[in-house]
Image (cartoon, rainbow over all chains, first blue to last red; front, side):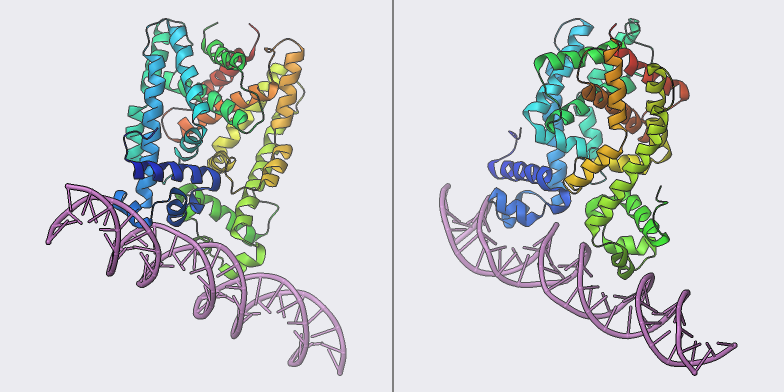
Length: 193
Length: 193
DNA sequence: AACGCTAGAATGAACGTTCTATCTAATGGG
DNA sequence: CCCATTAGATAGAACGTTCATTCTAGCGTT
């Protein structure tokens, strides 16, 4: 997830993510990050200019990584239906594989702590734009209902997010069949008939 | 929203909500709450035992209020389809009317800062149980796909949440026709055919 | 000997909470 | 009707702790 960083930066980012998920941002002190990552505060400030920068860097790294992963599914050759399925499968897969990253983005994408500029860059480098494109295509072909493709993508993402939350909290199972059914629910809701 | 509290408590809860949405929990200090609510810290501690208690009280109050509001829609006499529509309409209406409450619950329902016991009580007093019941009924009648009703409710709630987020961020419109279409998307995805 | 890097103590600000003094309003005996 | 008494409510200073950040001294390579 943090391959582009050096060992120390990686340790700091990984530790910070872990603490934020376990304890909340307000309980994530530099002293605790230093202790758990086994990097002194001196070193942390050698690589990062502030706590805010760590959090924003974390945000950027996760969104970029996830974005590339999901786009692998969207960019394959196939029918609209196939690419739809591959795309959402990737979203589910990455969320299951790195639940902390998923939870972090989910919780802080609307937080004032993340700079607007970082959110904007993350959006552009993420998978939303290509997914919007796919949906627009489906609407041109009269396959999907006529509506704002951005809105429909957001609604489907919401469905997936809440399915994952439900799973991660232990309230529901997450089987392969269940995943296919969830994607089918989204597809069917979007279609004209 | 806070009718069951006295004037001071009401001012504190309202101010706290406003600051948390504007500035994040970690920037919501007691000094700031005192200043903005025009209640001294002495008085705040006369009515609340701690900052944690304020936040958890806030959470309980909003969920209870919203829960009762949505249940008005679900408890009316009508077909499954009608009650489905009324229920989700109420969710959308309350989110539009009190966006701060909506955002707060959305952001902190998975935060470790809210006591597990408070979340549990809130869930039981909220609208999830009756909505689950409605979905279970629709499945018994072979109207909806056969799946875990809790999961489908969560997915639909996710769709609504992300539609509202998209609207509140100014990315999409929210017209009456748009609301009906969103509910239709959910309904159609849930149905067997 | 120089430089990048590290550790951890030091710093001053800000935090949640407590303390003390004062204010307000209700009560009751004369 | 008046004042003494009381208990609750309020304000804001004070407290001890913890915070993000900076500083200083030393480490290991080159």
